[in-house]
Length: 209
Image (cartoon, rainbow, N blue to C red; front, top):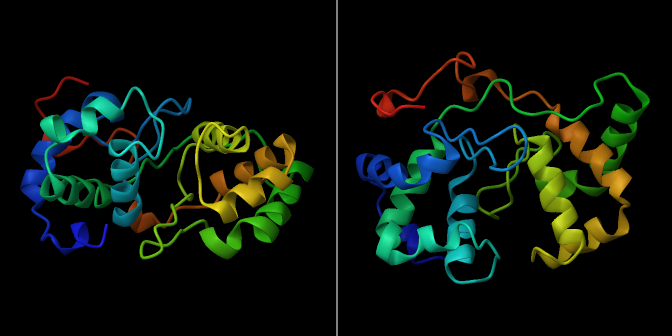
């Protein structure tokens, strides 16, 4: 991981490498509201890089994605650094998938407390995550995706950091849903968002969407 971060990013090469990813994750890297694919746009580079390496090396189970991240398709370390740098700078979906309980419902308030008590110490009070520590940005992520991943980790179907595993296991499924509902509704800074939901990645202007 340390060696990889020493590569100098090449944005244009990253755009070309992202052609492989865009078929599922979409040219905008917005994923899907139903949680099938996560929003990658705006995610920390270190987080994206760690996930690619974990999938490539078998530390994270993803049968669908693993073939595509192998060197014969995605390329070596330089390509990985380039593509995550490209993805990180893409503007985020201004209408990502949110949980079912808006403020000021009781569920929203309960979720806010659960998040602050159990998640904010690592993921940040605004769900901003931490690039250096490779802690994912939850702010702006699809609720359905976060909930699916949290349940998978709780059931032992996804390997996560021991500290996170302990937190997830002590919360009930309902409590997880409430906490994730809250973080899904934290406002993303305007400068990180695309101007509208109709924005299309100009780098893929010739790609049929």
